[in-house]
Image (cartoon, rainbow over all chains, first blue to last red; front, side):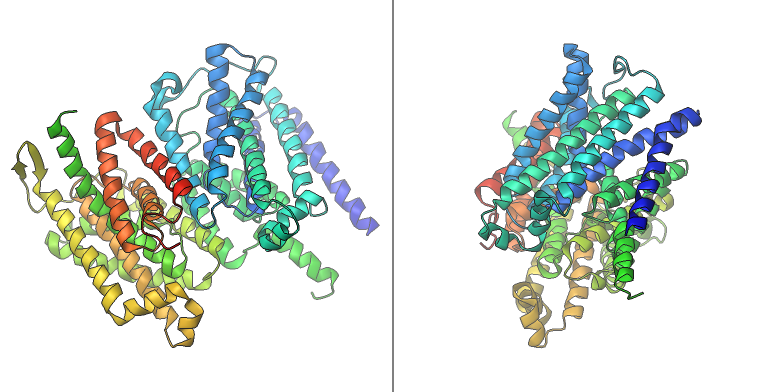
Length: 315
Length: 286
């Protein structure tokens, strides 16, 4: 047991060392760029995983990222508000929208939530296109100013890394199966009625988790917009929502570590496939089908089940 | 908006609504019988359009012959997909969702590869417009709406009067009990998926002769079909028709007034209202 723990922490330390020194050793801006996108994707995937853990599958996670992105960009460009305040306000606006959508649809059982969130992405896109003022229409907003103090790619790398680490810490604590909140979340899927009978307001818990997941998507969207320095209605469209779902499914749905593993590996694979046209969606689609049929718990779920079986002496 | 423009967009909306009804009926059939939310429905619609396009332009089929052939092709495709994939994840809502999402991604990607990126259109068999008062109605649209109407009637007869339709209804109510009474669930599921796919496919074939086809056309009609099945009440054919025609009209009138991008926003607002006020939809069961 102790040896296991030492191994675990040393692996963790090595990974932390590598990611903290990466921009110092690798000067290739493209690789640094991939890592920045990867950290933001990890946050998006963790948010969706958390929402799923609370028993709701959102098909519109990218819409909330777009709300965060547009809010903070508009605040910075039109009202000259400092980035960090705009960043927090972006999260607040995203949370309010999530409260509205989640409050209405999460109370009704069935497929309403999934379908509404799916449609919501396209609705936001329609609004951005229909109102060139202030959203910039189909071309979006270009020439978004740098965040003061964070101008080089390396500085951005550390900002995205810190953001991902903080989010990971929060989501991990929330989802951890030993914390009381994690137990409540697990119970939502197992037996909601029983939880209600224990005096837990399951609807509130579900809406709260949805808001937290969406707020972090809003934060991630805000950072991504200021990093890419341009945003248009296609930056966060349905294909982005689907990408995030594939990340989560690959790593193992409902598992925070799985979200990290899935987003990390598939961001890399996605970037490798980027040059060859539309094959990314072919590979992602095939992967989704294979995972559903043969690896329904995802990569991480598969390994952790194997480990449990091993510890019981069954393999 | 003058009265003529209003009536014109109303009629246009009704015709489009009829095609939405076809797509939405397939979706609601799959949901109520197999509990599948088919995210690949838009791609099936797209494939239907392209199958019909190639039948007419490459193999020189008559347009009217190409329609049933298209339906047959996608019916068989549905049966194959059911055998290969859907039968393995039956009963798991989440896995069904992910599976149909994967299928949709693959079909779309293959669509870009094989059908190319250029817009194509199925040559219309009849041309000309009817002039009725101040309203102009292309004959092709009238034909499409009539075909849609006919198919809805046939589907109603199939579900209400035939043995397989009775089995479908019994599975919708209680699949385990109907299995005990000797209903062949595998067969009914296969037929239901085939019919759902065939209805989406003919929607695509009808649209392809009015508008253009490209591999990404499936998304918007599918989203509208989702809105329709919730508005009308899940599993209700009558509600589906009502909501489909209504959405077609709203779409067309709002698009004339405010622009096409906002038509979708208005439809979504109605969807939210329905979920708040009457979650079971117009004609759904409680």
